[in-house]
Each structure stands twice: as structure tokens, then as C-alpha cells.
Length: 271
Image 1 (cartoon, rainbow, N blue to C red):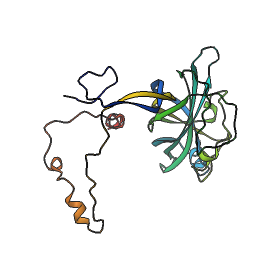
Image 2: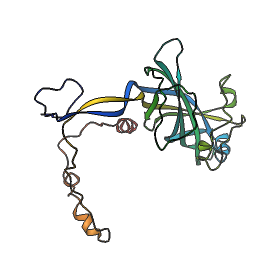
Image 3: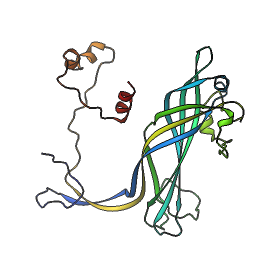
């Protein structure tokens, strides 16, 4: 029987000791998304561009979410609602193949902009606390947007000739310093030569939170049940003795479990 507490009415049989007032970040609204982002512009670093210009084909190796910027703005025509603008920055690694069938590694940046509309309630209080003394600024009390995302799956990687470049494609020529620092060779932002476009699969959760005071039931003080066990780092055998014997590695299983993670499912489909 699952004895974990869940939100909702508490039965009279529950051993509640007291009602406790706490300050927490309450989630007012949230959403989850499964974005298939097609044909994102790949901005290679300076070292990779010559390989792309001479390539006859490209192949993706990995995609990494390196950062995301989040901005919240109030919706004037709908009280309590806010737009959350997220810009994802990805480091993409791949290979470019030349006529000599030589594969050269290419590295670059891709950017994805996403906007969602969420309810964040209203609040006009100005909060001050000790240890954070600063000059007063007249600023509306916006909710806090939190974005959770995993590294994307690289679904497609294609090479485009100059004549195949989409008309009116948006050019980004200025990148934040923290992004430029992630590419030591510098990013190539010229318009000459072939280009690469990437299609990504992105899973994300976005939510709006506000600090608020709640009264919650307290059952008891939280006392850790696990003892703190140390180890002698100078004795590797002491660490080895704590590792359980890997029985499954020696005996074949009776059945194969289905893949649970999104990467396991995707990787199994490629094989």
C-alpha cells in the first residue's frame, strides 16, 4: 500500500501535530511540451565552416542544451496572464563528409525561440528583506518563470546549397557573451558558403511561481533514518566490498524490459 501523502483532504486518522505557516513558491500554472523543431539554422564555429563549404554530406553526432534565457511580460488584455519567452541555446556536434570520403568534426550553435501563455495571478507588493539592501526601484511584482528541459534529440541534420537557403531567413549576428564563451574558436556568422540545418526534438516543462504564505499540516520533525557511513579512500578494497555483486551481468534475464527513457526509445529505433 502506498502511504505517501498527496494533495487533498487529510483524513481524521492522520497524526497531524500542528498547523505550520511557511513561505513557499506556489505554482499557479504550468505546461509541458514536446516540440519538434524543424530546420534550425546551424551557426558553425570558424574552424568548422571550411569543412561545411567543401562537404557533400553531413551527419549529426550530438545535441546539448547549454543555456536558456527566460523573460516574463504581463498580458494587458487578460488580467493575471503572462507570456513566457524562452530562448534555448544548443551546442550541436556533427561530421561533414568531403569528396574524398573524409569525415571532419563540426561544432556550432542553434537557437530556438518559444513563447507560452500562462496564468500567474496578480501581486503588487514590494518585498524587502535583511541582507538584500538595495536602492528602491518601481517594478511590478511579476511571477517567476521556471523552465525545465532536457538535452534534445537530434532528429535530422542536412546540408543546404546557397541556392536552397530560405528567402527572408532571420540572421542573428550578435550572441550573448556567455554563449560566445562556449565556443572558443568563435562563431561564423557570414552568409557565404553552404549551410547546415538541424531538426531537434525538445521536451520541456514551463511554470509560473509566486512567493506566498501557506498553512500546511506538520506530522513531525524530519529526522534522517539513514546513518552517515564513511569510507577509507586510501583503501580501494574497502570501497569495492560495498558494491553489490552484479548477478544480472552473469545470468541472462527471462524477459527484456521496455525502454523507459526518451533516449533509450530513440537510440533503440536507430539500431
